[in-house]
Image 1 (spheres, rainbow, N blue to C red):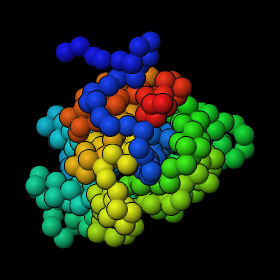
Image 2: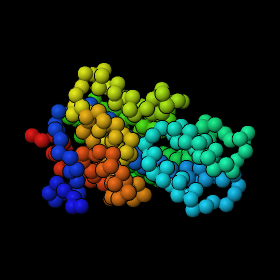
Image 3: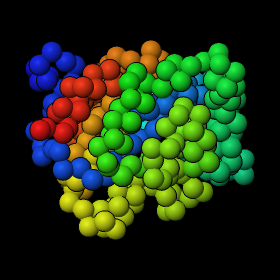
Image 4: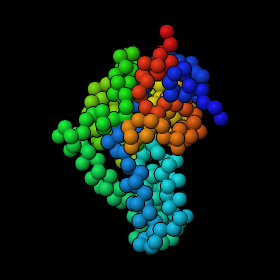
Length: 277
């Protein structure tokens, strides 16, 4: 299947849609703006495997099931991933019922390991050993600034716990551009991306194409599509901080992304396309 790019760019147009009437913009954070949490998948996978196996040796079947679930669940609230982990632990039957933790117990184990890695990066950032450019996707801060300068009301909506995403948005210098930074609360019902999009449209009496959704996960792109929003899928290579991640690209196409980019390295062309004169 051939790709359709804006001339001379890596900006891939999947669906032609109405543009330029945006009033609000919703941004995912991790993998879209910040890469402070790059590698979270490599933290979650061992936690899931250890929990499922109960001390037994891993099998290709279990490893594949964990890898596939993490891949399709990118962007959802962590507590939902841990609820699914509880189901997987029961399904495989390696752990006695009275030793199976609830979702909050598994989430605590995962978060403890993840935050050890993240806090090391935060310490380097605060010490000046890691720059904001190195802690964010290429051109992301510039893109946030440009969208803000267009007068849009901007929000972060993230599956990361709300205190953490608010703190990290401040550390990478973008917190001041957003009217609200919305992260995961204790339960999924309290805060999730589907609810945020629907409430935003209803509260402000918006039509779908007045909302721009920007994210690297299929969850936000899918919910944007379902509500008629215009979506920019960011198929980011978080390890390098720039360039394509082909697996993300395929997931974002399947989720209904209108525009695909590897990073924000071509913001002049991207802004020209989103806001045609």
